Length: 179
Length: 121
Image 1 (cartoon, helix red, strand yellow):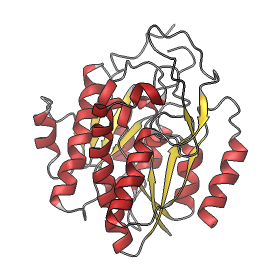
Image 2 (image 1 turned 90 degrees about the vertical axis):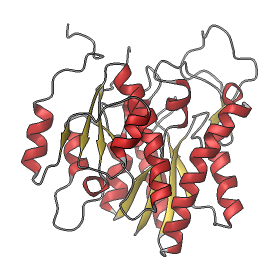
Image 3 (image 1 turned 30 degrees about the vertical axis):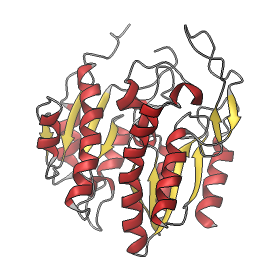
């Protein structure tokens, strides 16, 4: 069918912020659907893991929207954009699967609050969720545009969202792959 | 880690086990069923420079897991991986090059408990 560039944590829930791992290792609902439909899997790096480590706090876009973190995301995005360009040149169809609610990997929903900082007290599911892309997805989009590569169809899994509905996620992924 | 279901086990996995060619066994399925997280190594058809960049990212992240006591292993092989790990001060973890499903299952089953994992009970 084509190549699915997937967020790191779809294959490795160990990369999640403490409290965020929904299963031991591979988040199988999305991965299983992609593979059962013949999509090749290519895993993108986790922008947050290497930059702020395993003991990082849950964060919002504004905390990651720094020159240094954008430079870090840009370096990762440049490599991924080169890989996507290679697959497109090979005639492959490409999709991108991010993570909704993530300050880095959000496709339609990120997390945003300009006031968060200092000692963290806010719980998971707090109203920091906001429409928009994460920092890494923004940088990847720009890296693809700079190469003249069409933006792949994309969506994010919804496990971090308080209203996560596995069946709705499955339908959305099926619709993306079938479109 | 309340409500967190991570396994503290991470495998650096050659592409052929994530996207198995026709007729070869499915390593990702086995790793998933055994509760391992997967860090995919670059595809073999990537140019050297691109693969080196990707391996550098893999090494950065593998070092973070190893330093925190996660069990990190290598499944298969990838040219340039040892050099990338050396660059972040990490030796090549225990490695298996399984030619059968059973070899991989046995290797994973024999791993010790990760030091990062909470004690049972």
